[in-house]
Amino acid sequence: MRSSLVSASVFLLLLTPALGATDKKIDAVDLVRKHIDSLPNGKGAGEVTLQSAAAVRKVLSDHQMVIVRFRVFPVARIMPEGLRASNIFAVDKNGKFEHLKDVKTMEKFFRAHAFSVKEDADAKSILAAWLTLTPEFHQDGMFKFDVLEKEFSATANSASGRAIVMQGGNGELKAHLQYDKDGRLAKVEEKAAIRPGPRPICQATKLLDADPIVRRMAEQDLLIMGVSARGYLMEQRERATPVLRDAIDRLWRQIEKNGW
Image (cartoon, rainbow, N blue to C red):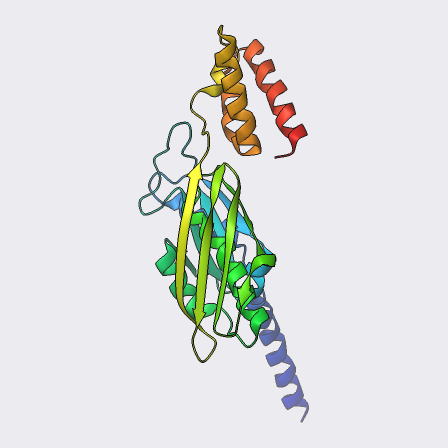
């Protein structure tokens, strides 16, 4: 009897670490960062962030959604093969990841992993998650979108809504999602009418231009771009003369004061 108890205790001690290992939290951002670094032209390239919106976490609870963006202004970088300016990676609990490269692949992913619709609120939640992610396929790093959840219309069979451009241009992205008899996503219809606004070209270098009109136009463009121009401005600041650096700093303080 004593021998049996000892054997059982040893078994439990050996089993406990294995069970704990399965509960280990996957660092999805680090995993995707390492993948990008392993690609040709990928070392240190791009910005890798976690999409942590509540709707996305609720609907795709078994995955972490990671966004990878590459700057394209003022000069486009060489991106790793197969990647776009903005990309979505889905990372599951085992560390396996999938690149959602377009609307079609994201629709397939949602069909497989989003929960089933049982009531109108479920249909709206899936639509909110969709409209949070799908703007990435239009993103050039300068846009800011707002999902208008209060305007959503939904039934157990479908949901419709839109995300509007709040910064970086104007326009909207409409989506209509249809669900099958089992409440699974069956079909997605999208319509985008998005127009970009000013983008970084050489505005920072024109802040001290001899022509006051040129200076004013450069400053106006950068103020319209707002906080999304930070990367460009800081890059220009590093190579600027002390006088131009002061001009960039003044402009950045104004952008921060504007808050957008």
